[in-house]
Length: 157
Image (cartoon, rainbow, N blue to C red; front, side, top):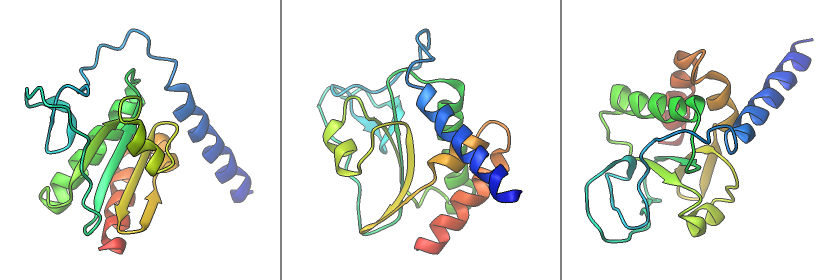
């Protein structure tokens, strides 16, 4: 019975993540475009530069990367918020966070085989997806997502 419930929750999470692409037509979230440089890899706060850049992810250390679409729903925003807060709380921002618009950074999305909203933790050749857990828990059980992010980073360090 537990396996059936888990399978249902995983399917629900994937459906929710997929629905974020089209469900937010009126979202006015500011996102860094190719003509703006993101401060510390964070697409939610532009530093005002007009130099096009592709975010650089240092493979020698653990990094948290969130790929999102231009239009974002409340769950998409919650995934980013919980991820950032977790890094600040447990790692004093020593683990970099990159918020990347996958529609604008297509080469980077292709490199990590991303075609939807995706939360991954990277170190070297290791890539661990927390997408399902993120979309299932970011809004309703943020403490559960926080614990998952923390445990995953610690296991990869």
